[in-house]
Image (cartoon, rainbow, N blue to C red; front, side):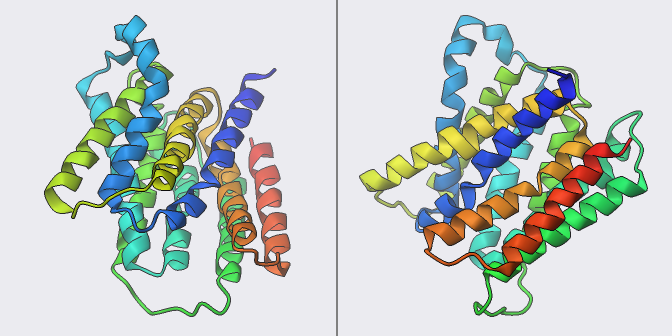
Length: 283
């Protein structure tokens, strides 16, 4: 299989896992954000522990690379979970999905030999329009509540994730297994913040089960797949493909809440698929 095609498959695997993140986050909204982020990230790092135990060099990364990974994983999820609590969740989630657009337009600033073409910009804007239709259309009747400072947090989260995704290709090469180290350090840091700043809560057996699913999936395996995708593929193409995430996430949320699919989902799907085709064909 061609290297770029394999990278796209890795990206689609991460996208499929991230589609469940919103549904899990809504179900676990009663769990404090530091605690939620910390437990899920530690669980997500566990698959890499046996590899690191057998080959410690897999986690022997430069301090600057470790700092980048911790800022990406911890910073992004903390800002996003806070934004979803202090701002209208639907609108904050839409602001968060600026990150694929940021990946496309910022790639030339972070990566050598990458240029920004009109097709890339058009595809990214079409993808964002599709995400907006999917997310806002699914919230019909919810009603907006005006400006919230949480939107700034969602914007910051989007910028952090896009920057982290691009920087993984700019720093010195590190093995994908090192993502487990990023997740472990980020998780421990988040748990320390929980102990210092958040009230203690009792978690039920169902909470632990959902946290395990979140950790092993959207906050675990997805990160490893995402790293493989970015190292083997075109960042701009992968950024455009990422607009499948809000579409799939919205569809899943509507299914979980037993709401019928509406016209906006079909329109969003058409825009996002067209954007993906246009973006991946751009040279």
